[in-house]
Image (cartoon, rainbow, N blue to C red; front, side, top):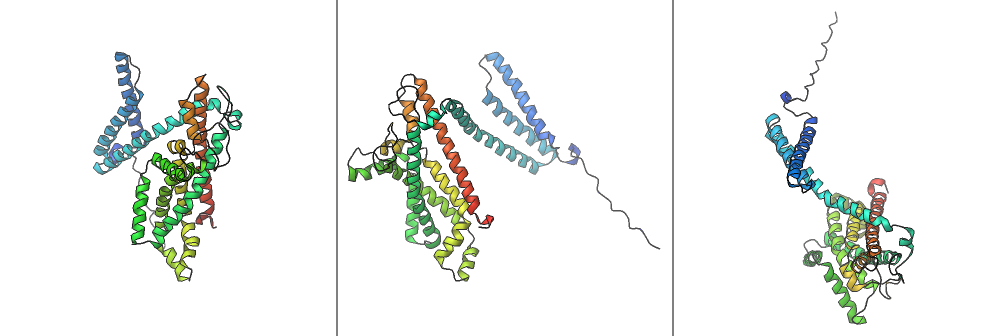
Length: 364
């Protein structure tokens, strides 16, 4: 005689209600909507009394404060203190993120809205040579920015990479390494104008005062880039597991080849990000380039001969030295600022592609 096994008992799903000790998913959103509506009504009443217009910033901030108080109190009653603290911190971090995004989004919208007016083929194909008033473009500034930044990257990236490799791989507990680390820390806080004065003073020794060259601007930017490259590369190299190095040494691979074939490819994604961070740090500098590279209205392809215009300096000169009509100059300034932002975005996209292609995860 066969006996049938009892059917497994499935636990009934407890709905997310107040009795289950857990808030339903719609409750935080409902509280947020209620906070926004209530505070909107309060500010509309205040606006009707004072007649000064709706204060959007105050409305959003007070709504966030009311929401945090409500979600914390209700969650502590229903879910307990621990979950209430988690919800409070989550809401606080979210609010802080949104507040941090406000200036970024505002700047992006302002630059795009004002820069589109002169975002035309003439702006990218002409310089300001013999141009007074409307017309003209920023071809000479775009070329100067690319050449000066490229030269600065060629100077600073090898120096920064080799310095970081020495500090991590060869200079452990070394007096010289500690000295280099101290100097890198000092260089990190150098104002950009000091880097420009250093490059100007260096070339004034050989060429005399008053010299303005594109290579001078590249050296000034390289001084600002080197500490960023060193610091970012150093941190990425420290993240590489020592087991990889030891496995390579166990196979009889020399240390320099281990660094080239194992350590650097493993950290290539982070190193590329650090390099792009350093380029983004200096590509918008104005003060050191005003002192070293100067400004001109003509296209100059030679870094070692004559002044060279760059987009930050072009934006500054167009906005500071407005002619007639002033709208033509401000439109060119906004268009140059938008072009600079797009160049930085493009460089970051290229860096991500490079990091993805050469990362060990791709099997290369």
